[in-house]
Image (tube, rainbow, N blue to C red; front, side, top):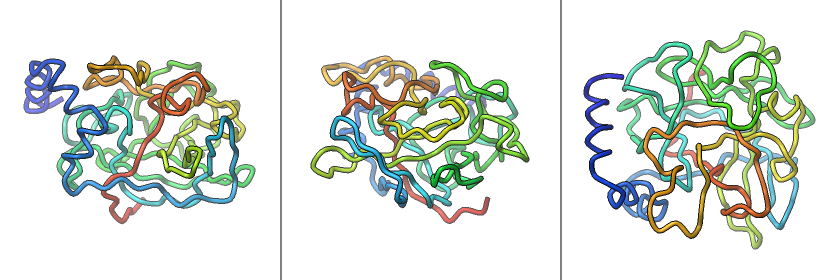
Length: 251
């Protein structure tokens, strides 16, 4: 992590919970985001529904984008501002939607289609490294994410993700979830039916009046069970993401 980035993190931490809540609360963030615009990727034809929530598999998402958590208001991030090395942990941090101002830009690299659903590697633009789990097989809920060299044969690693647009009862778009293929049993499972999804450590709580654990800057990104009808956010916890300020990608 560069000195300037370290200073930025420390100064923000000193602002206290009220300032953190302003930065992290989805409503406040959306009101101050300026030119940032959240989008869903193009959905395919594979769908599933549970508890009134519909999941639609994404079959076209070849863009470079900042990936924003709709609950915490922060973005997928790597330490510092430039290229990083293998095994660097992935966390969340307030979004920088400029095209080159941080290392928060990622692109989705299509790998193969399984059961009619497109799988992707999530590749950091500045480092060229893939979103990765330890080892090569399935990992349990709560496992932290890192970046690592993209495997030349993605089927042999746990770097593949399916992406699903989620829709609430009545048709309201909620955002997208990223489901890890290997951690979900090396099979395509609609996130309303199971699977392990991209997660911010901690839980969403619709009754929070101050920033919860998953609102913390630098909170690690993990995998966790995708859906539970008793959770906040239509049972999807803090697993809903949006694509901000998409650029044309060159994978």
